[in-house]
Length: 610
Image 1 (cartoon, rainbow, N blue to C red):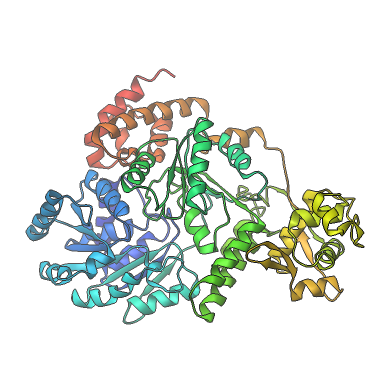
Image 2 (cartoon, rainbow, N blue to C red; image 1 turned 60 degrees about the vertical axis):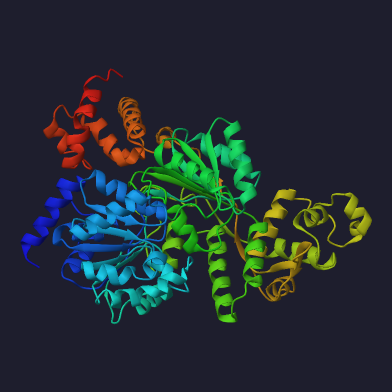
């Protein structure tokens, strides 16, 4: 490719988007797209995937058709592009009549560079042939994992995209996703491309995210304690049920947080309103089901909490990926318990799917459970799932980015205690839950113990040396390890598996992680609880600039980050530019935004006395 093409791309990157350089992996994808090749890119959330189709559209011209799964995501991207001076529009069911008319007028005039549509709209009658007549030059497919039946978010309409590509005249395709294991990647390539595309599989590592897991122990208290370190930050709390989102949002609101529920069962207007508040304002917490998120392009999400265990590592990775898209430090916390594991297993068993698919889903669930109960570095375990080998957080001088590397974790031989607990399960009839088993082992006389005559069991009181909580934790770990199974889908309780019998009768040993002992946080770590690690002076100016940004955003009716991202405001607070030329040098300040907002932010910086 001629050097001038890269120079042109870099010039547009700076003048339109305000960036001095490409992020890792971006140029390889952009270069292949500009060469007219088919490209399939797997890049983590926050790596700038959208730039991989936006920049070629501006450098090479013509019309790029972008297939995106959610209307909210389309509208968000069009809003950002328009404010950067890029000719973009979308065609979707939420368009007003005037918006649709304007989009078609601009299409017919050849003015647009990017047109966003949903896969369902593209499959509709007549749209493809009409777009072909207008001369689509390339097709970009976002969230490409939706095309794969092995992906965690399969959308049947994505299967029609290969035909749409042919109907458009076989135009080059750029397909992008953040989440795909090897099997899913192979399926995507087979479904979308007539021959092998140029593939770019970038590192799955998100070093700015801190990964933490904890067994459930009064989850509301655990979530509230976590949020104390993140006041003023925006975040998402994922819940497994609609009812849970509403109760948790109400509880957090009572604690003084701007917390809102979001789930598919809510009235559409209210749901959209809650999403808009989250997108447009700072310091908002959304308690949501997984219906919320795939279309969320908010770069300054400072934390993601899972109030319940996700069903797969793919889902977990994509959901935590919504935090820290701006590259600044962000926090994650995943709570999990035996009930979560049992529910997820039951859901898979009750699905109307073939045996092969069921086996794969159980394998994925077991990988998620293993991550929860891991005794190794979380990052290493997560990345190895996607086929990427890496050193632990403790290696070298890298910052500690997972809870296990930041605490004392020990893998110990748990065979003797496991045999005691498994014996209690067997002797009590293989139908009781963790609390009752803990009562048997600690010799606690309860009404159920008395009624069942379980004080007469040989195992009654053999575990007096440990607290009940230690035995319920061991029950969870043995269930996670596959030594125990759910005795009844209706009544719960535990039964031995073949593995459990092998441990009980001495044919197999088992080593388990002791629940970690968190180390004391240093003053530096406590200061970093702002999630950006800013010192007082810079933090005060940053907050001052955020207030200006919010007032402009409300006046213009757009999300605050569309004006400038947190990352750009922090750079302003650090550099304190005194004129437009200095402001131009700030990352994220393109020419259009410099003209629109430069003077206002310069005035705010000059007049700040904090």
